[in-house]
Amino acid sequence: APRPNTPVGTYDLVVVSNRLPVDKVTRPDGSVEWRTSPGGLVTALEPVMKQADGAWVGWAGVADDESEPFEHDDISIVPVTLSAADIEEYYEGFSNDTLWPLYHDVIAPPTYHREWWESYVRVNQRFAEKAASVTATDGTVWVQDYQLQLVPKILRELRPDLTIGFFNHIPFPAYGIFSQLPWRAQIIEGLLGADLIGFQRAADAGNFTRAVRRLLSFTTKGTAIDVPIDEEISEAIEPARVSTSRRGSLVRTVHARHFPISIDTQSFEDLARRPDIQARAKEIRAGLGNPKVVMLGVDRLDYTKGIGHRLKAFGELLADGAVTVEDVTLVQVASPSRERVAAYQQLRDEVELTVGRINGDYSSISHTAISYLHQGYPREEMVALYLASDVMLVTALRDGMNLVAKEYVASRFDDDGVLVLSEFAGAADELKSALLVNPHDIDGLKESILEAIQMTKSERTKRMRALRKRVRDYDVSRWSTAFLSTLTDPSGTPSYVATK
Ligand code: GDG
Image (cartoon, rainbow, N blue to C red; front, side):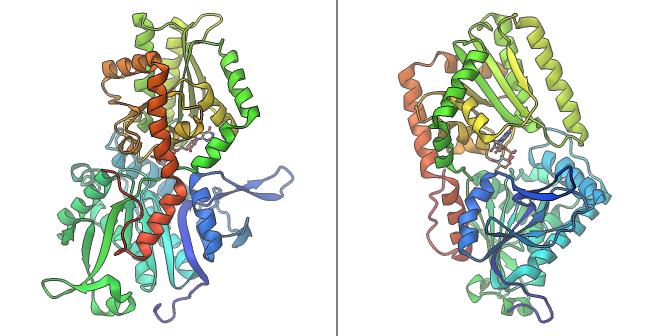
Protein backbone atom coordinates (compact mmCIF):
# COMPACT_ATOMS: atom_id res chain seq x y z
CA ALA A 1 0.00 0.00 0.00
CA PRO A 2 1.12 3.60 -0.45
CA ARG A 3 2.52 5.30 2.65
CA PRO A 4 -0.01 7.25 4.70
CA ASN A 5 -0.23 10.97 3.87
CA THR A 6 1.32 10.54 0.43
CA PRO A 7 -0.92 11.95 -2.28
CA VAL A 8 -1.93 9.27 -4.75
CA GLY A 9 -3.04 9.74 -8.35
CA THR A 10 -5.30 7.94 -10.78
CA TYR A 11 -3.04 6.73 -13.60
CA ASP A 12 -2.15 3.03 -13.76
CA LEU A 13 0.81 3.49 -16.13
CA VAL A 14 3.06 6.53 -16.00
CA VAL A 15 6.00 7.18 -18.30
CA VAL A 16 8.61 9.65 -17.04
CA SER A 17 11.14 11.14 -19.43
CA ASN A 18 13.19 14.32 -19.53
CA ARG A 19 11.27 15.58 -22.57
CA LEU A 20 7.55 15.22 -23.07
CA PRO A 21 6.35 13.70 -26.35
CA VAL A 22 4.93 17.16 -27.17
CA ASP A 23 6.62 20.51 -27.76
CA LYS A 24 5.16 23.75 -26.51
CA VAL A 25 5.19 26.21 -29.39
CA THR A 26 4.25 29.86 -28.83
CA ARG A 27 3.02 31.51 -32.03
CA PRO A 28 3.99 35.09 -32.92
CA ASP A 29 0.56 36.31 -31.73
CA GLY A 30 1.30 34.82 -28.29
CA SER A 31 -1.11 31.89 -28.57
CA VAL A 32 0.15 28.47 -27.55
CA GLU A 33 0.13 25.23 -29.48
CA TRP A 34 1.26 21.75 -28.37
CA ARG A 35 2.84 19.80 -31.21
CA THR A 36 3.56 16.09 -31.09
CA SER A 37 7.29 15.57 -31.45
CA PRO A 38 7.55 12.56 -33.74
CA GLY A 39 9.76 10.13 -31.87
CA GLY A 40 9.98 6.36 -31.72
CA LEU A 41 9.15 6.28 -28.04
CA VAL A 42 5.80 8.00 -28.54
CA THR A 43 4.86 5.62 -31.34
CA ALA A 44 5.87 2.67 -29.18
CA LEU A 45 4.03 3.74 -26.09
CA GLU A 46 0.96 5.44 -27.54
CA PRO A 47 -1.11 2.23 -27.87
CA VAL A 48 -0.12 0.98 -24.39
CA MET A 49 -0.79 4.38 -22.86
CA LYS A 50 -4.22 4.62 -24.41
CA GLN A 51 -5.12 1.12 -23.31
CA ALA A 52 -3.93 1.38 -19.73
CA ASP A 53 -5.04 4.65 -18.19
CA GLY A 54 -1.69 6.26 -18.95
CA ALA A 55 0.06 9.58 -18.34
CA TRP A 56 3.37 11.05 -19.45
CA VAL A 57 5.48 13.15 -17.04
CA GLY A 58 8.23 15.35 -18.49
CA TRP A 59 9.53 18.77 -19.46
CA ALA A 60 7.92 20.76 -22.30
CA GLY A 61 11.23 22.02 -23.71
CA VAL A 62 10.94 25.68 -22.65
CA ALA A 63 12.28 27.35 -19.50
CA ASP A 64 9.94 28.22 -16.62
CA ASP A 65 6.88 26.71 -18.27
CA GLU A 66 4.23 26.11 -15.62
CA SER A 67 1.49 24.55 -17.74
CA GLU A 68 -1.12 22.50 -15.91
CA PRO A 69 -1.69 18.85 -16.90
CA PHE A 70 -3.78 18.41 -20.06
CA GLU A 71 -4.88 15.85 -22.63
CA HIS A 72 -3.18 15.65 -26.02
CA ASP A 73 -4.19 13.07 -28.63
CA ASP A 74 -5.75 10.94 -25.88
CA ILE A 75 -2.60 10.91 -23.74
CA SER A 76 -2.50 12.75 -20.42
CA ILE A 77 0.43 15.12 -20.29
CA VAL A 78 1.88 16.17 -16.93
CA PRO A 79 4.48 18.93 -17.34
CA VAL A 80 7.45 19.37 -14.98
CA THR A 81 8.91 22.88 -14.71
CA LEU A 82 12.60 23.52 -15.35
CA SER A 83 14.10 26.97 -14.73
CA ALA A 84 16.82 28.42 -16.96
CA ALA A 85 19.35 27.49 -14.22
CA ASP A 86 18.03 23.88 -14.09
CA ILE A 87 18.45 23.61 -17.87
CA GLU A 88 22.01 24.88 -17.64
CA GLU A 89 23.09 22.71 -14.69
CA TYR A 90 20.96 19.56 -14.68
CA TYR A 91 20.43 19.22 -18.45
CA GLU A 92 23.25 20.86 -20.42
CA GLY A 93 25.68 20.39 -17.55
CA PHE A 94 25.36 17.12 -15.66
CA SER A 95 23.31 15.20 -18.26
CA ASN A 96 25.05 16.32 -21.44
CA ASP A 97 28.54 17.34 -20.32
CA THR A 98 29.14 14.82 -17.49
CA LEU A 99 27.07 11.66 -18.01
CA TRP A 100 26.89 11.68 -21.82
CA PRO A 101 30.67 11.69 -22.45
CA LEU A 102 31.33 9.37 -19.48
CA TYR A 103 28.79 6.78 -20.62
CA HIS A 104 30.15 6.95 -24.18
CA ASP A 105 33.57 5.77 -22.99
CA VAL A 106 35.00 9.27 -22.47
CA ILE A 107 35.29 10.01 -26.22
CA ALA A 108 35.18 13.60 -24.98
CA PRO A 109 36.37 14.50 -21.48
CA PRO A 110 33.51 14.60 -18.94
CA THR A 111 33.25 17.70 -16.76
CA TYR A 112 32.62 17.16 -13.05
CA HIS A 113 31.00 20.05 -11.20
CA ARG A 114 29.46 19.68 -7.78
CA GLU A 115 26.87 22.38 -8.52
CA TRP A 116 25.69 20.40 -11.56
CA TRP A 117 25.33 17.28 -9.45
CA GLU A 118 23.30 19.15 -6.84
CA SER A 119 21.01 20.43 -9.56
CA TYR A 120 20.68 16.87 -10.96
CA VAL A 121 19.59 15.64 -7.51
CA ARG A 122 17.04 18.46 -7.11
CA VAL A 123 15.54 18.00 -10.57
CA ASN A 124 15.34 14.19 -10.20
CA GLN A 125 13.51 14.77 -6.90
CA ARG A 126 11.02 17.03 -8.70
CA PHE A 127 10.34 14.47 -11.45
CA ALA A 128 9.93 11.71 -8.85
CA GLU A 129 7.49 13.73 -6.74
CA LYS A 130 5.42 14.59 -9.78
CA ALA A 131 5.31 10.95 -10.89
CA ALA A 132 4.44 9.81 -7.35
CA SER A 133 1.54 12.24 -7.15
CA VAL A 134 -0.16 11.13 -10.36
CA THR A 135 0.26 7.33 -10.20
CA ALA A 136 -2.58 5.16 -8.88
CA THR A 137 -2.16 2.74 -5.95
CA ASP A 138 -0.16 -0.31 -7.11
CA GLY A 139 0.45 1.36 -10.48
CA THR A 140 3.43 1.06 -12.81
CA VAL A 141 5.98 3.78 -13.58
CA TRP A 142 8.46 3.51 -16.46
CA VAL A 143 11.36 5.95 -16.17
CA GLN A 144 13.41 6.75 -19.30
CA ASP A 145 17.10 7.45 -19.67
CA TYR A 146 20.24 8.82 -18.10
CA GLN A 147 18.85 12.21 -17.12
CA LEU A 148 16.64 10.53 -14.50
CA GLN A 149 18.72 7.80 -12.87
CA LEU A 150 17.86 8.88 -9.32
CA VAL A 151 14.11 8.82 -9.91
CA PRO A 152 13.58 5.06 -9.23
CA LYS A 153 15.02 5.27 -5.70
CA ILE A 154 13.21 8.48 -4.73
CA LEU A 155 10.00 7.11 -6.15
CA ARG A 156 10.30 3.84 -4.23
CA GLU A 157 10.79 5.76 -0.98
CA LEU A 158 7.71 7.86 -1.67
CA ARG A 159 5.61 5.02 -3.07
CA PRO A 160 6.74 1.48 -2.14
CA ASP A 161 3.52 0.14 -3.64
CA LEU A 162 4.58 0.97 -7.21
CA THR A 163 6.17 -1.30 -9.80
CA ILE A 164 9.07 0.69 -11.24
CA GLY A 165 10.92 0.15 -14.52
CA PHE A 166 13.89 2.05 -15.92
CA PHE A 167 15.31 2.00 -19.44
CA ASN A 168 18.76 3.37 -20.28
CA HIS A 169 18.90 4.48 -23.94
CA ILE A 170 22.66 5.04 -24.01
CA PRO A 171 25.52 2.63 -23.23
CA PHE A 172 26.47 1.76 -19.66
CA PRO A 173 30.28 1.89 -19.43
CA ALA A 174 32.73 -0.62 -17.98
CA TYR A 175 33.52 -0.11 -14.29
CA GLY A 176 37.00 1.25 -14.99
CA ILE A 177 35.34 4.22 -16.69
CA PHE A 178 32.15 4.49 -14.63
CA SER A 179 34.18 4.61 -11.43
CA GLN A 180 35.52 8.06 -12.40
CA LEU A 181 32.17 9.51 -11.42
CA PRO A 182 32.40 11.14 -7.99
CA TRP A 183 28.73 10.21 -7.41
CA ARG A 184 28.96 6.65 -8.72
CA ALA A 185 27.41 4.96 -5.67
CA GLN A 186 24.44 7.35 -5.61
CA ILE A 187 23.72 6.65 -9.28
CA ILE A 188 23.78 2.86 -8.76
CA GLU A 189 21.58 3.16 -5.68
CA GLY A 190 19.23 5.44 -7.61
CA LEU A 191 18.77 2.88 -10.38
CA LEU A 192 18.34 -0.01 -7.94
CA GLY A 193 15.09 1.58 -6.79
CA ALA A 194 13.60 0.03 -9.94
CA ASP A 195 12.32 -3.56 -10.25
CA LEU A 196 13.61 -3.91 -13.80
CA ILE A 197 16.51 -1.97 -15.32
CA GLY A 198 16.66 -2.27 -19.10
CA PHE A 199 19.69 -1.72 -21.32
CA GLN A 200 20.30 -1.81 -25.06
CA ARG A 201 23.01 -4.50 -25.15
CA ALA A 202 23.82 -7.52 -23.01
CA ALA A 203 27.23 -5.90 -22.42
CA ASP A 204 25.59 -2.80 -20.88
CA ALA A 205 23.55 -4.91 -18.44
CA GLY A 206 26.74 -6.81 -17.55
CA ASN A 207 28.65 -3.57 -16.91
CA PHE A 208 25.88 -2.36 -14.62
CA THR A 209 25.70 -5.61 -12.65
CA ARG A 210 29.48 -5.57 -12.16
CA ALA A 211 29.31 -1.97 -10.91
CA VAL A 212 26.69 -3.08 -8.35
CA ARG A 213 28.99 -5.84 -7.08
CA ARG A 214 32.07 -3.63 -6.98
CA LEU A 215 30.42 -0.68 -5.26
CA LEU A 216 27.82 -2.24 -3.00
CA SER A 217 28.87 -5.91 -2.72
CA PHE A 218 25.29 -7.07 -3.34
CA THR A 219 24.76 -10.66 -4.44
CA THR A 220 23.93 -11.12 -8.13
CA LYS A 221 22.94 -14.23 -10.00
CA GLY A 222 22.64 -13.92 -13.78
CA THR A 223 20.43 -10.91 -14.38
CA ALA A 224 19.02 -10.91 -10.81
CA ILE A 225 20.38 -8.61 -8.12
CA ASP A 226 19.52 -8.98 -4.40
CA VAL A 227 18.98 -5.58 -2.80
CA PRO A 228 18.77 -5.67 1.01
CA ILE A 229 15.66 -3.99 2.46
CA ASP A 230 14.27 -3.42 5.90
CA GLU A 231 11.12 -4.98 7.20
CA GLU A 232 8.97 -1.87 7.08
CA ILE A 233 9.59 -1.45 3.34
CA SER A 234 9.16 -5.16 2.70
CA GLU A 235 5.58 -5.05 3.93
CA ALA A 236 4.63 -2.48 1.33
CA ILE A 237 6.18 -4.39 -1.56
CA GLU A 238 4.52 -7.07 -3.63
CA PRO A 239 5.37 -10.36 -1.84
CA ALA A 240 6.61 -12.07 -5.03
CA ARG A 241 9.48 -9.57 -5.25
CA VAL A 242 10.71 -10.11 -1.69
CA SER A 243 12.69 -13.09 -0.42
CA THR A 244 15.10 -14.07 2.33
CA SER A 245 18.77 -14.27 1.42
CA ARG A 246 21.06 -17.12 2.47
CA ARG A 247 22.28 -14.96 5.32
CA GLY A 248 18.70 -14.62 6.51
CA SER A 249 18.13 -10.97 5.62
CA LEU A 250 15.25 -9.60 3.55
CA VAL A 251 16.01 -8.73 -0.07
CA ARG A 252 14.16 -7.27 -3.06
CA THR A 253 15.03 -8.84 -6.37
CA VAL A 254 15.92 -6.36 -9.11
CA HIS A 255 16.56 -7.50 -12.68
CA ALA A 256 19.06 -5.93 -15.10
CA ARG A 257 18.43 -7.15 -18.64
CA HIS A 258 18.88 -6.03 -22.21
CA PHE A 259 15.97 -5.01 -24.43
CA PRO A 260 17.37 -3.62 -27.70
CA ILE A 261 15.09 -0.76 -28.75
CA SER A 262 13.68 -0.57 -32.25
CA ILE A 263 11.58 1.56 -34.59
CA ASP A 264 8.05 1.55 -35.97
CA THR A 265 9.25 -0.49 -38.94
CA GLN A 266 5.96 -0.55 -40.82
CA SER A 267 5.58 3.24 -40.80
CA PHE A 268 9.00 3.65 -42.47
CA GLU A 269 8.16 1.08 -45.11
CA ASP A 270 4.78 2.76 -45.70
CA LEU A 271 6.49 6.10 -46.30
CA ALA A 272 9.06 4.51 -48.60
CA ARG A 273 6.30 2.97 -50.71
CA ARG A 274 4.61 6.33 -51.30
CA PRO A 275 4.99 7.42 -54.97
CA ASP A 276 5.67 11.04 -54.02
CA ILE A 277 8.54 10.00 -51.75
CA GLN A 278 10.00 7.75 -54.45
CA ALA A 279 9.77 10.64 -56.90
CA ARG A 280 11.55 12.83 -54.37
CA ALA A 281 14.32 10.20 -54.04
CA LYS A 282 14.89 10.34 -57.83
CA GLU A 283 14.90 14.13 -57.69
CA ILE A 284 17.56 14.03 -54.94
CA ARG A 285 19.81 11.82 -57.10
CA ALA A 286 19.31 14.07 -60.11
CA GLY A 287 20.10 17.12 -57.98
CA LEU A 288 23.40 15.49 -57.04
CA GLY A 289 24.27 15.09 -60.72
CA ASN A 290 23.17 11.45 -60.96
CA PRO A 291 26.42 9.97 -59.66
CA LYS A 292 26.87 6.18 -59.81
CA VAL A 293 26.93 5.92 -56.03
CA VAL A 294 25.25 8.08 -53.39
CA MET A 295 26.49 7.57 -49.85
CA LEU A 296 24.60 8.94 -46.85
CA GLY A 297 25.27 9.83 -43.23
CA VAL A 298 22.44 10.97 -40.89
CA ASP A 299 23.30 11.95 -37.35
CA ARG A 300 22.68 14.51 -34.70
CA LEU A 301 25.88 16.56 -34.80
CA ASP A 302 27.41 14.66 -31.88
CA TYR A 303 31.00 13.58 -31.18
CA THR A 304 29.85 10.01 -30.49
CA LYS A 305 28.70 9.53 -34.07
CA GLY A 306 32.14 9.28 -35.69
CA ILE A 307 31.39 11.88 -38.37
CA GLY A 308 35.05 12.96 -38.47
CA HIS A 309 36.27 9.37 -38.99
CA ARG A 310 33.80 8.94 -41.86
CA LEU A 311 34.94 12.18 -43.51
CA LYS A 312 38.58 11.24 -43.10
CA ALA A 313 38.05 7.86 -44.78
CA PHE A 314 36.12 9.42 -47.68
CA GLY A 315 38.67 12.23 -48.06
CA GLU A 316 41.50 9.69 -48.27
CA LEU A 317 39.64 7.60 -50.86
CA LEU A 318 39.34 10.74 -52.99
CA ALA A 319 43.01 11.61 -52.41
CA ASP A 320 44.11 8.07 -53.32
CA GLY A 321 42.09 8.25 -56.54
CA ALA A 322 40.16 5.14 -55.44
CA VAL A 323 36.94 7.10 -56.04
CA THR A 324 36.12 10.31 -57.93
CA VAL A 325 33.44 12.91 -57.29
CA GLU A 326 31.83 12.11 -60.66
CA ASP A 327 31.15 8.56 -59.45
CA VAL A 328 30.68 8.83 -55.69
CA THR A 329 29.17 11.55 -53.57
CA LEU A 330 28.47 11.76 -49.84
CA VAL A 331 25.39 13.42 -48.36
CA GLN A 332 25.86 14.20 -44.67
CA VAL A 333 22.85 15.37 -42.67
CA ALA A 334 24.12 16.66 -39.34
CA SER A 335 21.08 17.86 -37.43
CA PRO A 336 21.79 20.66 -34.93
CA SER A 337 22.16 19.39 -31.37
CA ARG A 338 23.07 20.72 -27.89
CA GLU A 339 24.41 23.91 -29.39
CA ARG A 340 25.04 25.58 -26.05
CA VAL A 341 27.49 22.88 -24.88
CA ALA A 342 31.12 23.83 -25.69
CA ALA A 343 32.17 20.38 -26.93
CA TYR A 344 29.41 20.54 -29.56
CA GLN A 345 30.47 23.98 -30.75
CA GLN A 346 34.02 22.71 -31.16
CA LEU A 347 32.84 19.59 -33.00
CA ARG A 348 30.83 21.72 -35.40
CA ASP A 349 33.90 23.82 -36.19
CA GLU A 350 36.03 20.71 -36.79
CA VAL A 351 33.48 18.99 -39.01
CA GLU A 352 32.81 22.12 -41.04
CA LEU A 353 36.54 22.76 -41.52
CA THR A 354 37.05 19.20 -42.76
CA VAL A 355 34.05 19.32 -45.10
CA GLY A 356 35.24 22.66 -46.48
CA ARG A 357 38.75 21.31 -47.10
CA ILE A 358 37.56 18.12 -48.82
CA ASN A 359 35.11 20.02 -50.99
CA GLY A 360 37.72 22.64 -51.84
CA ASP A 361 40.25 19.99 -52.84
CA TYR A 362 38.04 17.55 -54.75
CA SER A 363 34.68 19.03 -55.83
CA SER A 364 34.16 20.14 -59.42
CA ILE A 365 31.73 22.76 -60.72
CA SER A 366 29.19 20.02 -61.49
CA HIS A 367 29.91 17.53 -58.67
CA THR A 368 30.26 18.18 -54.96
CA ALA A 369 32.24 15.70 -52.87
CA ILE A 370 30.18 16.21 -49.71
CA SER A 371 26.71 17.76 -49.51
CA TYR A 372 26.73 18.87 -45.91
CA LEU A 373 23.40 19.82 -44.36
CA HIS A 374 23.37 21.28 -40.86
CA GLN A 375 19.58 21.16 -40.69
CA GLY A 376 16.71 19.06 -39.46
CA TYR A 377 14.27 17.61 -42.01
CA PRO A 378 10.76 16.14 -41.94
CA ARG A 379 10.54 12.36 -41.69
CA GLU A 380 9.35 12.17 -45.35
CA GLU A 381 12.55 13.80 -46.56
CA MET A 382 14.65 11.43 -44.44
CA VAL A 383 12.97 8.44 -46.02
CA ALA A 384 13.51 9.90 -49.51
CA LEU A 385 17.21 10.26 -48.62
CA TYR A 386 17.35 6.64 -47.40
CA LEU A 387 15.79 5.51 -50.70
CA ALA A 388 18.13 7.66 -52.75
CA SER A 389 21.28 6.28 -51.13
CA ASP A 390 23.21 3.20 -52.24
CA VAL A 391 25.40 3.13 -49.15
CA MET A 392 24.44 4.16 -45.61
CA LEU A 393 27.38 5.01 -43.34
CA VAL A 394 26.83 4.55 -39.60
CA THR A 395 30.29 4.92 -38.05
CA ALA A 396 29.51 5.75 -34.41
CA LEU A 397 32.40 5.48 -31.95
CA ARG A 398 29.85 4.55 -29.27
CA ASP A 399 26.07 4.45 -29.59
CA GLY A 400 23.41 2.87 -27.37
CA MET A 401 21.54 1.49 -30.37
CA ASN A 402 21.47 3.82 -33.44
CA LEU A 403 18.00 3.98 -34.90
CA VAL A 404 19.17 5.49 -38.19
CA ALA A 405 20.65 2.10 -39.16
CA LYS A 406 17.27 0.43 -38.54
CA GLU A 407 15.34 3.18 -40.35
CA TYR A 408 17.51 2.78 -43.46
CA VAL A 409 16.85 -0.95 -43.50
CA ALA A 410 13.11 -0.52 -42.85
CA SER A 411 12.84 1.92 -45.77
CA ARG A 412 14.56 -0.38 -48.29
CA PHE A 413 11.50 -2.42 -49.36
CA ASP A 414 13.36 -2.84 -52.70
CA ASP A 415 15.90 -5.08 -50.87
CA ASP A 416 18.69 -2.86 -52.16
CA GLY A 417 21.30 -0.63 -50.50
CA VAL A 418 24.30 -1.46 -48.31
CA LEU A 419 24.56 -0.67 -44.60
CA VAL A 420 28.06 0.00 -43.28
CA LEU A 421 27.69 -0.25 -39.51
CA SER A 422 30.03 0.37 -36.60
CA GLU A 423 30.65 -2.50 -34.19
CA PHE A 424 30.34 0.09 -31.44
CA ALA A 425 26.66 0.80 -32.11
CA GLY A 426 24.20 -1.40 -30.19
CA ALA A 427 22.53 -2.19 -33.52
CA ALA A 428 25.58 -4.28 -34.47
CA ASP A 429 24.44 -7.03 -32.06
CA GLU A 430 21.35 -7.53 -34.21
CA LEU A 431 22.22 -6.33 -37.72
CA LYS A 432 24.88 -8.89 -38.40
CA SER A 433 24.42 -8.88 -42.17
CA ALA A 434 25.62 -5.30 -42.40
CA LEU A 435 29.25 -4.58 -43.29
CA LEU A 436 30.53 -4.25 -39.73
CA VAL A 437 33.42 -1.82 -39.24
CA ASN A 438 35.76 -0.51 -36.57
CA PRO A 439 35.62 3.24 -37.33
CA HIS A 440 38.94 3.83 -35.56
CA ASP A 441 40.64 1.69 -38.21
CA ILE A 442 40.62 4.19 -41.08
CA ASP A 443 42.17 1.73 -43.58
CA GLY A 444 39.58 -0.89 -42.63
CA LEU A 445 36.81 1.68 -42.96
CA LYS A 446 38.08 2.69 -46.43
CA GLU A 447 38.12 -0.95 -47.51
CA SER A 448 34.57 -1.48 -46.25
CA ILE A 449 33.37 1.63 -48.09
CA LEU A 450 34.94 0.32 -51.31
CA GLU A 451 33.44 -3.11 -50.68
CA ALA A 452 30.02 -1.48 -50.24
CA ILE A 453 30.42 0.54 -53.44
CA GLN A 454 31.48 -2.51 -55.45
CA MET A 455 29.09 -5.06 -53.95
CA THR A 456 27.12 -7.08 -56.49
CA LYS A 457 23.36 -6.75 -56.70
CA SER A 458 22.78 -10.32 -55.56
CA GLU A 459 24.99 -9.87 -52.48
CA ARG A 460 23.22 -6.61 -51.63
CA THR A 461 19.83 -8.28 -51.89
CA LYS A 462 20.89 -11.23 -49.77
CA ARG A 463 22.20 -9.01 -46.99
CA MET A 464 19.34 -6.53 -47.09
CA ARG A 465 16.74 -9.31 -46.88
CA ALA A 466 18.36 -10.67 -43.73
CA LEU A 467 18.56 -7.20 -42.20
CA ARG A 468 14.95 -6.46 -43.05
CA LYS A 469 13.75 -9.66 -41.48
CA ARG A 470 15.34 -8.69 -38.17
CA VAL A 471 13.91 -5.16 -38.17
CA ARG A 472 10.45 -6.39 -39.18
CA ASP A 473 10.36 -9.13 -36.55
CA TYR A 474 11.67 -6.89 -33.78
CA ASP A 475 9.90 -3.57 -33.99
CA VAL A 476 9.39 -0.99 -31.27
CA SER A 477 6.00 -2.28 -30.14
CA ARG A 478 7.59 -5.66 -29.49
CA TRP A 479 10.26 -3.85 -27.48
CA SER A 480 7.81 -2.00 -25.23
CA THR A 481 5.59 -5.04 -24.78
CA ALA A 482 8.59 -7.17 -23.83
CA PHE A 483 9.82 -4.61 -21.31
CA LEU A 484 6.44 -4.06 -19.69
CA SER A 485 5.55 -7.74 -19.49
CA THR A 486 8.94 -8.57 -17.95
CA LEU A 487 8.43 -5.69 -15.53
CA THR A 488 5.08 -6.95 -14.33
CA ASP A 489 6.05 -10.64 -14.39
CA PRO A 490 9.81 -11.13 -14.06
CA SER A 491 9.43 -14.89 -13.63
CA GLY A 492 7.68 -15.27 -16.99
CA THR A 493 9.61 -16.43 -20.02
CA PRO A 494 10.99 -13.36 -21.79
CA SER A 495 8.89 -12.87 -24.91
CA TYR A 496 11.79 -10.99 -26.46
CA VAL A 497 14.34 -13.49 -27.59
CA ALA A 498 17.55 -11.83 -26.57
CA THR A 499 20.43 -11.49 -28.97
CA LYS A 500 23.74 -13.11 -28.05
C1 GDG B 1 19.65 7.95 -28.37
C2 GDG B 1 20.87 7.03 -28.31
C3 GDG B 1 19.49 5.19 -29.28
C4 GDG B 1 18.02 12.81 -36.86
N1 GDG B 1 18.07 13.91 -37.63
C5 GDG B 1 16.82 14.09 -38.10
C6 GDG B 1 16.00 13.10 -37.59
N2 GDG B 1 16.74 12.32 -36.83
C7 GDG B 1 16.22 11.14 -36.13
C8 GDG B 1 16.68 9.85 -36.74
C9 GDG B 1 16.50 8.91 -35.56
C10 GDG B 1 16.78 9.80 -34.36
O1 GDG B 1 16.65 11.14 -34.79
C11 GDG B 1 18.18 9.60 -33.85
O2 GDG B 1 18.22 8.37 -33.16
P1 GDG B 1 19.59 7.60 -32.96
O3 GDG B 1 19.26 6.29 -32.38
O4 GDG B 1 20.27 7.49 -34.28
O5 GDG B 1 20.50 8.48 -32.00
P2 GDG B 1 20.30 9.45 -30.67
O6 GDG B 1 19.58 10.68 -31.01
O7 GDG B 1 21.68 9.65 -30.15
O8 GDG B 1 19.41 8.57 -29.65
C12 GDG B 1 20.79 5.99 -29.43
C13 GDG B 1 18.30 6.12 -29.16
O9 GDG B 1 18.48 7.09 -28.13
C14 GDG B 1 17.01 5.33 -28.84
O10 GDG B 1 17.15 4.55 -27.70
O11 GDG B 1 19.33 4.39 -30.43
O12 GDG B 1 21.90 5.11 -29.36
O13 GDG B 1 22.08 7.78 -28.43
O14 GDG B 1 15.18 8.47 -35.45
O15 GDG B 1 15.92 9.54 -37.86
N3 GDG B 1 14.68 12.98 -37.87
C15 GDG B 1 14.15 13.93 -38.68
N4 GDG B 1 14.89 14.95 -39.19
C16 GDG B 1 16.23 15.07 -38.94
O16 GDG B 1 16.88 15.98 -39.42
N5 GDG B 1 12.84 13.84 -38.98
